[in-house]
Structures are given as C-alpha cells and as structure tokens.
Length: 298
Image 1 (tube, rainbow, N blue to C red):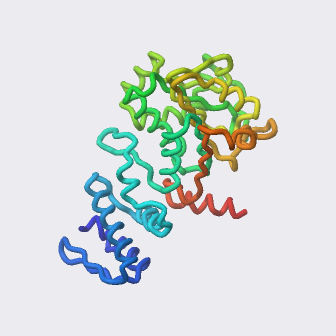
Image 2 (image 1 turned 30 degrees about the horizontal axis):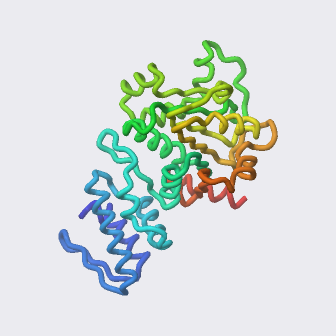
Image 3 (image 1 turned 180 degrees about the vertical axis):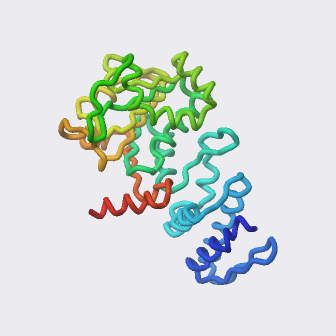
C-alpha cells in the first residue's frame, strides 16, 4: 500500500486532485465514493497500479500522469497496455506505455511496412527493437537488420581512423544500446557474429534483397527521397520493415527529407501504415516532454 500511495502519500494526493471522489486508505484497503463515471476511472487506475506493483515495478508520478491521461481519453483501458507484453527480458516485461505507443505496435503487427514518426523519447526505436527480437525468438523471421543513414548531428567529426565498421560504429551505437537492453550481451554478440542480427549503414543496402527479415530504418528523417526509395525496394518475401524518425530533428543538409516524400506517395497504399506519436507519448524523464512541447510551440 505504501507503493500505491507513494512517498508521503504523493500519488494518492495526485489522484485526489484529479478526481472529486472521496478516497480513503486504511491498512490494505482503499475506499472511494462519488459519481459512477469517476469511480469507474478510479477503479481502473488502482487496478492497474496493483498490476504494476505485482510485476515488480514502482509507480511514480510520470506513470500516474500517463494512466490518468489515458483514462480521460477513453480510447483504451490501462489493462490493454498491461496485457500487451512485447518481450520479457531479465524478468522485466517490455510493453507499450501510452495509447500512441499501443497504436504503433498494433500497426507493426498488422502491416508489412510501418512508419513510426514522433519526437525524441516516444520509444520508437526501443519498441521496434522489442518487436523484432520477439519475432526472432518466436521464429517468425530469420534475422534482424538494423540500419540508419550516416549523418552527423550539426558538426563535422572529420577523419575517423580504423576499419570501415570502426568508422561507422559511433553513428550506429544507439542501435546497439537498444539491442543490448533486450538480449543477453553474449547471445546478442553470437547473433551479430553469425549474421542473425546485422547492423549496417544505409549506404550499404543498395543491391540487396531481404527475405524472412525484420528490417528497421532508424533516424529516417536524415534520408533523401532517393535513399528512402532505395531502402523500401529492398523488401523481400516474409519480411517486415519499420521506419522510425523525428521530422523536427533532421540533420540532412541535402534537401527534402525522404519521410515527407514517402508520406506523399505511399499514404494510400494498403499494408503501409504511418503512425504519429506526440509529446504525450514521451516516456523518458518528464522534463523531456516539456522540452518537446516548448519546441513544438515555437
């Protein structure tokens, strides 16, 4: 019950501020009285908090704000998020945490090609990698291919020493980071060594066809229309493609972004989905959501 009410009852006060119903806690029992609509929301909220705690997680104010926002929209119940487990790793379940993230993972399940577009911190790359690893574990696909364009973020690093892969490693490191959070490091390295998981720059994709694969293009806002066309036409049989990006953070100095071109040309084609995430789907530090909102306002 201490986890439900939060430090110094902070979570309980947050719930009481949001709803006009009267809520009281005695021992391990919560009592609420008020209007039927509010009571349904409060019941759903506390039920999800109990499930959150049973899963070994600790509810905080960011979690509570997401759940309250979800209940206000009436788009889906918190249980729909809790029951949608994408991947379990080291005793931790990876699942969508917002309605936007749930729509995104559902779009990946339904479509062969999915675009996940939205600001930093909305879990685009993380959730996509979780879906890919889950599909690999379930033997739905035979390999995972992760790629991104090699574009520097506003500054030139100049000449980098080493082999070709050592040169591009700093650019694709975020893909390794997401991967190693989901797979045991030794297993991940074995899969990389035997080609089950391939992490490669976008420039190396031309002329290839990917069958029986889950192919992820990250940071797609830095592609040109020609690069995007080249990537999409690599699709083979039995494969899925997911393209993620944030159009507000393009580092591409070479003209129009490939995402905008793809949206214009492909939006009406069946089996291709464009899924938009927003600041409401940010699941990093709550300050990130406010930073995103401030830049969007400007």
